[in-house]
Image (cartoon, rainbow, N blue to C red; front, side):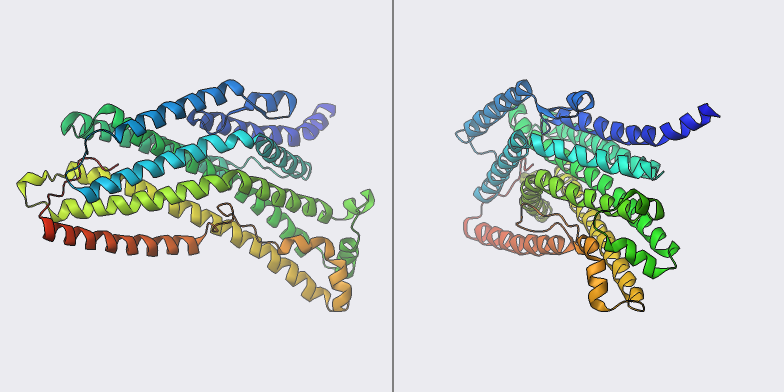
Length: 422
């Protein structure tokens, strides 16, 4: 009997440790790509994240070498046959370099933010496990694992495809030039995959909190007693026994704290990565257009291999954008459902209390009216509106690109050939 009692007491902590171990393992994996220069192991030992100075030094040395090679390529001969395509390729390179700098350098100042994120996860899981709630959901872990596997498969496929087409089959450019175009793409996509996985973790925890709240509200038939519980801002042990409302309040508060810390960490990634996606996707669609339009001329070197280079990048950029915006919309919708639930509580409570009394009693739950959204450092929110704006902007710039293409080709008869526009 004592063994069974011990196991029941120990089981919640085991579930919490499992959920945290999954998070720690995910962070260790993404650390390989350079944008998490922290000693992840120190959190499991001391409960605090520390910045690894040696890792920081390696990242700085890498960036210096990268920019030295990139600037050196400016003084070499053009890699394309026309000015318009050459300019678009250099714009891509500069945007890639800027994105790489933002993603790799800004985490140097965010060690305390990462520490806060891990502690928020730990607090939430600890509170949830005390309520006998399993936070280590197999579905959540499965989606995170599938996202990482999809990312790795596509990166390996895209890298192998480009090596064959660019360096072996067509020999379009040098190995050094291919490296400075491919590495920023990998790091940027890894950062977006990391963002997606972190948002998945907060999304399922938000669902857990709202599900507990729904069950608690639906199980309470005596609304005067429910509002009496809500009226007290500092809950006692006796009240905690009568209702799970105090614990739900704290769970939701942990999610809001987690959202603020996570936005501080992911905001620079969203700003730089989505800007890069916009520029590169626009340019790659333009390259596809020029290749298809000029395919009848034997001197232009059209091939499905060249089109495939562009299509690969377009597909992964579109997939990342749609995936992140959809997930952010789902998180916002979950927070909206919580607001509607509290509104329903107030409506039902109006049978017993005046509007002023209800407003006073539910004051502790005013935070549930806060929408859980994510933005790119305040420049724009990551949602479907951003997605529509990006589509409109890409369409506009494509029209400008095509107009310049037609004008330049008709006036100068220049040959348009995209040797390598990655």
